[in-house]
Image (cartoon, rainbow, N blue to C red; front, side, top):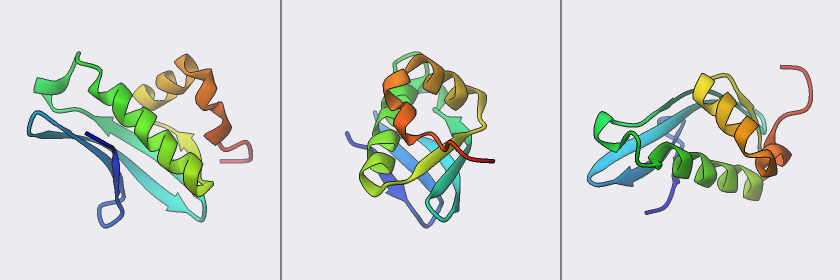
Length: 93
């Protein structure tokens, strides 16, 4: 179970229990705007979205991408995980 970047759909994906959680993004150079994170109802409350975000951050970090979270879940996730702040975009949105 690892997070992948489905570039064709512009989203990070994590498959668990036969279902897929995802985090959509819009790419602007090396900046990814994260407007929506979603887990199927059967995966909610199991930490799937958190694992998705951890994996997405790992991919962004490895590529040198930066994130601008606009989805309320993603904003809250970054607030709760200050160790991931290095991937946050520091400039103007």
